[in-house]
Amino acid sequence: MTAGVFLVLLVLGVPIGLVLCWSAVAFIYGSGNTVLLDSYPLQLFQSLDNFGLLAIPLFILIGEIMNAAGITTRLVRLAAAFIGAVKGGLAYVNLLANMLVASILGSATAQIAMMSQVMVPEMTKAGYDKGLAVGITAFGGLLGPIIPPSIVFVVYAVLAQVAVRDMLVAGIIPGLMLSGLFLGTIAFLGRKYAYPRGEALPWSERLRAVLEALPMLAIPGVIVGTIVGGVASPTESAAIGAVLATLIGLVYTRKLRFADFPKILVRTGLNTALVLFLVAAAGVFSWVLVFGQVPQTAAAYIQDIATTPTAFMLLVLVALLLVGTVIDGIPGLIMVVPILLPIATGVYGIDPLHFGVFVSVNLILGLLSPPVGIGLYVAASVSGVSAMRVFAVTIPFFLVSCVALVLLALFPWLSLALL
Picture (cartoon, rainbow, N blue to C red):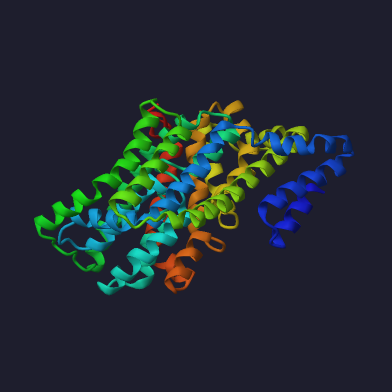
């Protein structure tokens, strides 16, 4: 009954948070344990009783302030300063700028929308295929939820009850690895298809771009540095980053005005409410799954198929790629973690941080996988091209992302080396 209600509501397009809540109610009635309804509101609110969740609105606030303060444009100029007259110059600039923005923003869809407006017109003007320009921008946006700060990692840390700091640190090497693989893909395609050469900027302009962007680099430096150094918690570092971004926007770039703050805070509040409602719904859904012994049943079934930790991880990889084609990011994480995490840690002895990075990157890739792929549609709608055209011209990046997932599955130290 529960599975039927879940699938029907999902097919009807009901928001995933409500799907989880109503599926939990269906399980309670289906099992005949209506006494659980007395604890339902408590479980709903108890899921949000976690200090680590305070980092989410602060990371979202940083992104909103950064947009209003004009920080993105200067980071793009900084990326251009490091790229000379090489084939695919603007493609490299696009990806490097995405890396810099990812170290501040932490949200894939927000980053894709923002960078599509900045980079796609410039690449099209330089002679790039528009679909390719949109695709590179979209895949660069995948770095947002991987390179700290990361809202997805914060949500996983809360679901898995692991330290938010450790989860963010675990994403550093995978984020850099994925960036390196994307840069290598651009180098290969640039030679094969003779991408337009980048503009060779005079050294004086390069130096100016670097000096202008230095204050902006202080934001990711402070956020990541204080977390890795143990000076501040992720929530505290996010608060420091928000204050720093505000000062840069008001004093340095002077594009941020006090009149902008009401709109910034409203957008931050709405986006935070969406994420936290999903977390609350996940708490109730996980509660009924555990009560119904779903993880134990799934574990017995999976053990018949996967006899080793590596086989289990590869099985999860394929399954989550399929899940990611219809459900993206945080909702997918909320659905699968309560079922798969107990199996990964209890049956196969997989480190929860390693598993968290692997699952998160796997589901994030779903943002750019048809038929749903919300990241594809965000980039396509902002740029005015077909989502399928974007995916078709960026298949090499999708395949490289799958290679990164296999490496993460086979080598746990990629996630755990800095811990």
